[in-house]
Every structure is written in C-alpha cells, then in structure tokens.
Length: 129
Image (cartoon, rainbow, N blue to C red; front, side):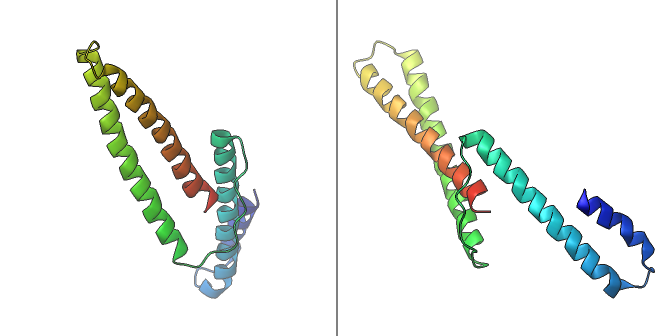
C-alpha cells in the first residue's frame, strides 16, 4: 500500500526533475524489497512450518556462493531423480529378482535423500535471502 501511495506522488514532479524523483523511487524500491522478503518468509513457513533463521547481514559475494550451492543441490537432486527412476523401472520389470529387496532398500534411502536435498534447497533459497 505504501509503495502504491508513493507511486501516486510521482506525477507531482516535473518531467525533467530526475533528482527529485530518485529518493521517491528508492523508497518505493525499498518498500517492495521488504514486501518480497515478507512473502518469502511466508512461503518458507508454508513449506517448512518454521520461520527462517535470522542471519546477520551478508557481504555482496555471499549470495553468489549460496546460489551456486543451490544450483549444485538441484543438480544432485536431478541425478538422484534419474537413479530413482531407474530403480523403480528395475523393480517394475523384475520384481522377483534376487536383488529386488536390496533395490527397495536403496530406493528408500534415495527417497529420503531426495527429501533432505529438497529441504536444503528450500533453506538456502528462502532463509538466506
């Protein structure tokens, strides 16, 4: 609401009054940034049932490392998804195979790891931004 009210004040400035408009636009951007953070917190709470940990202010380079970490976790999640599909297919095609029980155990472990990786991705994505 505050950002909308500030946006409505922009028409009061002259077209060439760039310096006068900059503080208003900065305030609008800051308000929108705060709103996005609130939305991320709500989404994180919906997914995890807990509020994200409050972290100290980070340097400019930390988010880049976090995003790289998320990308690596997503890559691992994709690889795990392929292996889960392979094991499911093996079990569908040969349910009476002598290693079927081992495959089921491995499949359960991979499913648990998949859940854990998804949780780590959620934590890195929403808790650190």
